Length: 495
Ligand code: NAP
Image (cartoon, rainbow, N blue to C red; front, side, top):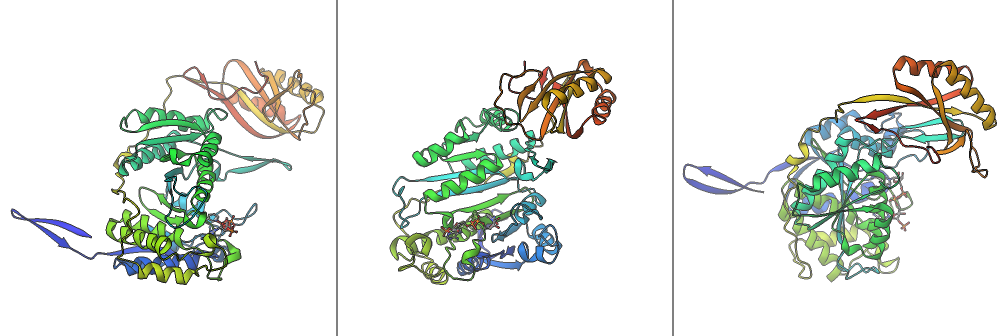
């Protein structure tokens, strides 16, 4: 790193070798192999890093720690503010939470930046099209908050929580990132046409904030079309801002366009800490086989070096990777198959040997640090001038015929001095009357009760009390109206 100092009237340029403290989490499965490779390459650039090796993931779960992240690891990231992380295995569909998600939430790394760039020497059906896009994925909200409940023994619910604050932070990060890389266009990919409140919140926020960035061509795209366009014409995209789950899927899809997950790096960006990691997981079937491609973690290391201001070392590694792949043609199994492939260690040694060489076939981007000042603008909660409660939705476990259940709800409404407006199954009207006779009902229904005017909490409690004596309720939602706008959606078939 070069520091500029001023002494009296004279400017001095000082070359100072700083030592950086970085938390290194080797991770599970192939994690130790790929992080060792990245560490060796980074160390070989001459940048001085004091790696604090910390645990997280499968081994920690096995020791009985439910978060999968020990306090020493949390303390280390808090101290160092920067971490390079290998993949962590997550138990699927039961038990513990993902230690990855826990880390992202613990350090409020609200943005996940995932570049997807065509790599010279790595032949794909898209080679030569100049793919160079970045997915900016919201990283702590949405369905990945992991708030799930079984409403009945056979009906599961996952809450998709999206906040104005979360949207504003990720949208500002997207725009600032696009500017820092001199990008010209930015897309926002949502499913706002169906989920008008949750996904719609990101769309509306994006469209508002776009006004502050007239230098960028900002466009909204529906996420399914975005997936289609990514496969059809990926070179049209530069930066795509999107919600957590959409971003997870789109970034895996995009990585396949440039050679696969072995080439997809990522950075989890927060105001207090940044965690750099590959998009890929622990690929357990390859553990210890010395065949895996370490490039995604090396590329994540390049992002980390730029984040700490070591731009030259980052560029040196980038060019060493280009030479290794495009000139020396040293490529791992995921690119060339079993015959003539390089092992993980051979690939790493070749990259280190190539440090200092320059590849002529690619124009370097003028990287700048992302100015995160603008992402730190405090976002106050929206304060409506007027608000009232129009009613309540109550979700039930029910196996009775719908006519019989409806009569019970009519009685409960009468008792609580409210009206039963509608009963629905998975968002579709089934009572009082329905033309849809082919509906395959499940053991869960929702009854919507409304008052003549605004209701208060004690009236709502009366409704809950009166339905409780007649049926098994599982979940409730207030029907709120903010500044004259309903804060809930109508069911299909509702007036
Ligand atoms: P995965 O580990 O990403 O592996 C899926 C496939 O991608 C592999 O079988 C392999 O494809 C290819 N691949 C992944 N990394 C590669 C690399 N470095 N080089 C070459 N090819 C690579 O996904 P998964 O099997 O669904 O998940 C395994 C575990 O990882 C799960 O426990 C999951 O929860 C966890 N996970 C962790 C993270 C994270 O820590 N951030 C992210 C995703 C998943 P082929 O089979 O075609 O060779």
